[in-house]
Length: 280
Image (cartoon, rainbow, N blue to C red; front, side, top):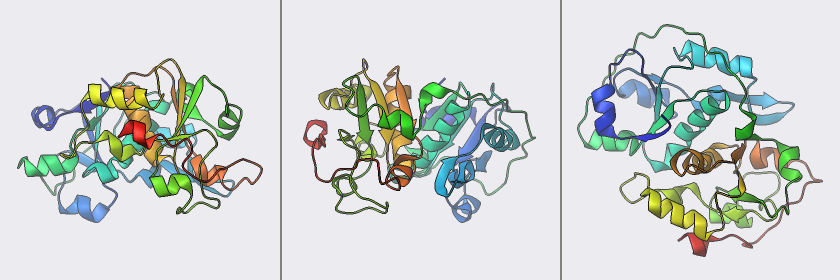
C-alpha cells in the first residue's frame, strides 16, 4: 500500500504491533508536547548529510538501513508519515521517498496531517512508544533517483519533463538561497502547495491529474522533480508516483544546492516556460 491514508483509517489502526508511525514535524519540542499515539519522532535531516562539501546529500544505503532499522522498520512493516499541514508536508514526503528509494514497498502519508487529526479531537499523547530495533535490508531503487549527470544529459530531451517544485520567485530568480538563482533550462514550475485544497488535504485525484496534464506533465514522459535540497521535489514526486501512478518519476535529490554550485551547468532567470497559468 502506497499513497495516503485518512485520519479515520489511522484511528482504527493505531496500536497495531506491525505499524510504524513517523512524526516528521521537524521539532522534537513539538513532538514532545503531543503526538499521535505510538508515533516516533524523525527529523528529515537525519536522512541526509554533507558529502564532498555539498550539504543535504542522501546518506549511503547502509546508513539509511541503520536509521530505519533503529525505528523498528523492516521491509514488511507498513509505515505512515505525518507532518502538521501542507506547509511542512514535504518532510513527510521526503521520508516516504527515502524509504521508497531504499526498497520499502508500503509507505503512506496521513492526509490532512496532524492539523486534521487535532481538529477532529482524536487521541494525542506525550508517551514515547516502546519500539524494538529491527533489520532493514536496504536496496537501491535507481528508477526513483536522479543525480546531476543524469539531469544534465536530459536537458532538451522531448521525452523528459523537468518539474521545479519551488515558489514562483525562486523559480524566476528574484529570490532564493542557492549560490546561483533561477531554474534549470526547460523546467516548468509546479509549486508543491498547488496540490492541496483549502482544507489542507490533497486535491481530488481527477483535479490533480488535470492540472499536471495541462502543464504537459504526462504519464508517457519521464518526469524529474527538483527544488533546493530535495524536499519540495519529493512532494511532487509523491503525488505523481504514488497518487497518480506515473510510471517513470525521479527525484533529483541534491537539486539546486548542488547544481547552482557547479558554474559550468546552465541556469536561467525569468518565467519561461513556468506553466503556472496552466496549473491554476
